[in-house]
Length: 248
Ligand SMILES: O=C(O)[C@@H](CO)OP(=O)(O)O
Image (cartoon, rainbow, N blue to C red; front, side):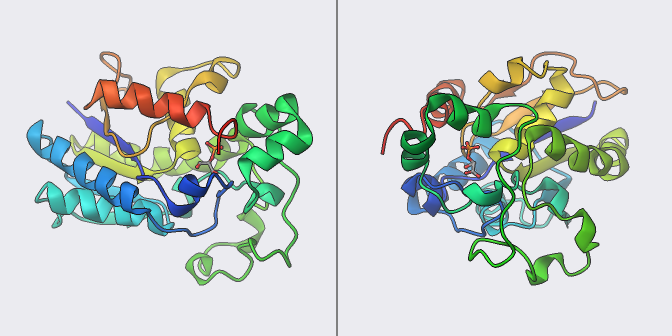
């Protein structure tokens, strides 16, 4: 039976500072490193052995996977990385303080930018210090497909072809697949797997650093509800993500 394990990267320096991050390549905070280690320990404790790792092109997801796999004694597994697993591009909000943005634009606009299904934030200017124009890690990607802002709907559009072409093929081969990615790219995948409506997905938040396990049938449909390896910590973590912006 194919098994899929999703892990959102541990807390990053910018999660800690409460800044919109998106494609900005920030690193894990000390707390994030600890969360990543705990994720690996949970995999080991529960006897989950991954056959292959997928990550985004962003350091915080790659660091998380490396630390977790080291803790799980699974550093040897093959790895594929793609920009299609990157965090949602947060457009002109990248680098902005969430609490200040909430204060400046009000709760409704803030929530629309953060969690609406299909409203992207304003496009980032190419000359912004937080733009990814010219970033060497995307040198083999057609520049016309690289985003300058994204809604969740646009994340789904760029993620699903990769899911179908690469990840699904490994799962259908019977592999246990580990994906280390981001809050919103994983929300996009969970929406697809659990068939969550455009409205309901607004209420779903993914905690940092806690593996979420899907057991799938041969149509890649979940055979039972996905489960977090530490459900209590996951509930607290998801609530903390939902509350971002309301506190410093
Ligand atoms: O800033 C971001 O890139 C994301 C994830 O950290 O934040 P949010 O939860 O507000 O979508």
